[in-house]
Length: 208
Ligand SMILES: CCCCCCCC/C=C\CCCCCCCC(=O)N[C@@H](COP(=O)(O)O)[C@H](O)/C=C/CCCCCCCCCCCCC
Image 1 (cartoon, rainbow, N blue to C red):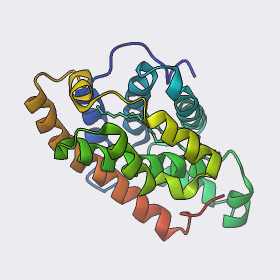
Image 2 (image 1 turned 180 degrees about the vertical axis):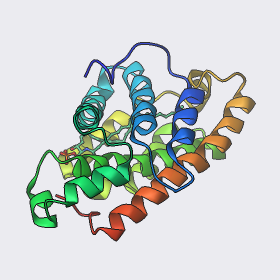
Image 3 (image 1 turned 30 degrees about the horizontal axis):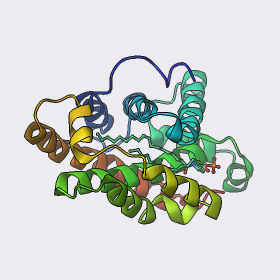
Image 4 (image 1 turned 90 degrees about the vertical axis):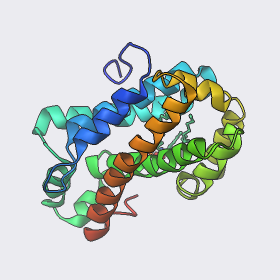
């Protein structure tokens, strides 16, 4: 938990750099920058206040689980993690509530939410709660029970304005922030696309 909650202000540039460093020439997704990108995002979420703590706690726990596996097995990439866990057989993997694969899958779905949300912010729509709800309904919501969906949509009403979001990104003027979003979204989309293919290839997109 401590590592994922590391101090320091949010910087979209750092998150962008982390996701840019994720993808290798061989189209592998490196675990270290992937987790670093998530740690940056979590820092942002934690700065939004207690109303979002049930979400950040879940994200912190998932990143911490992957950090522990990264330390223990020295996985370099998502591909090596998947290969290692599949070696025990698909049935054994499906039975594990603490597998790296099911944890990555949850973050992977959240990455799709992020991609859609950032696209919305870039589009100029000022109502962040609407942007966030739309992105959520098109991604994570279908995997969450009613009570989580309800709590999430209530929390979204407490989101700061679009202008505040652009300021918190810490990259200069609103125009510069929007430009950086345009730069960041394809990197995030690339990581999402490669992970989606990897999980589809191994029939892991519905891990319980
Ligand atoms: C300048 C713009 C930058 C935007 C930065 C956004 C920062 C967002 C940081 C983190 C995103 C949250 C990641 C949430 C991961 C959720 C994983 C998940 O689906 N977990 C559920 C299933 O887990 P298992 O039970 O199967 O282990 C779990 O039940 C979830 C519980 C918490 C509710 C999750 C709601 C997620 C809403 C989407 C994030 C909204 C954040 C809004 C902040 C802008």
